[in-house]
Image 1 (tube, rainbow, N blue to C red):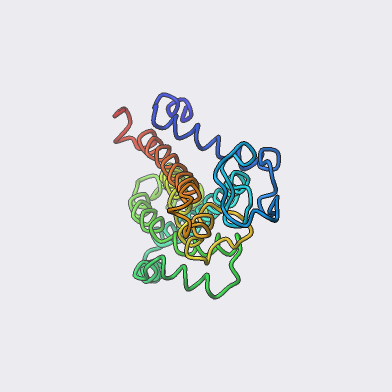
Image 2 (image 1 turned 90 degrees about the vertical axis):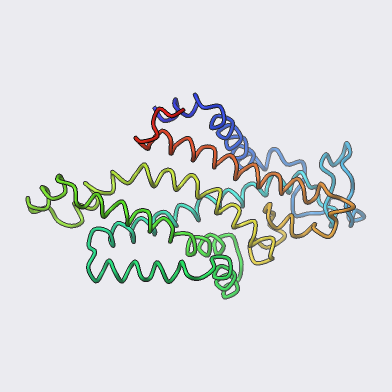
Length: 278
């Protein structure tokens, strides 16, 4: 049903096609990449080369095949975007639904902690956390997740308060249902559409966040390629070899746009107030 509705929306269909192509590129990287992305094919090529028949997208500043690095870079960017956002959604949902249902001192404490996290600039907090550990893909995933859950928690908290006051929740509570049963059987299922939409839109945000951290040098570390650190590595050649910055930058923008198109479509499909607007 959801897939069929997405296929009827041309922008969402375009986004879905682009995402599938990126995922396929990441999975099939060992077979698609013509060279090892971390090795210089020719030791004499220690400078960028323009695209030619041997190197279709040219080479980077160390003479590595840029097409191979672009293909393998999709892996790190997608892994971080999906995992970091998935963890952020799980943390935000857990805190939001607990605070919204229990309320009182527990709910107040959890939401004050959420407000405290929101008060810190996310990028500054991410830089601080990344600086405390040796940067790697998994550290970047955890850092991004730790600064990305607060908005989700706020949304889930507001919806949980509304759901907790519904008649069916009052009825199952009066019937003696436990708190865990009410949360997981009667409240969380109603939050699934919201979590799906936030989960989809959040992948675009976390992918851009990863690119920002890698651009600043505290994200995915060379020689492992990611689209963000590829921009960082080659920014000094922007005028003489602009494709080294433009291609990974365009890939980041295209990935973020595609997930936003899918997220907007899912919001229209799953929100009863917007259903049929298309």
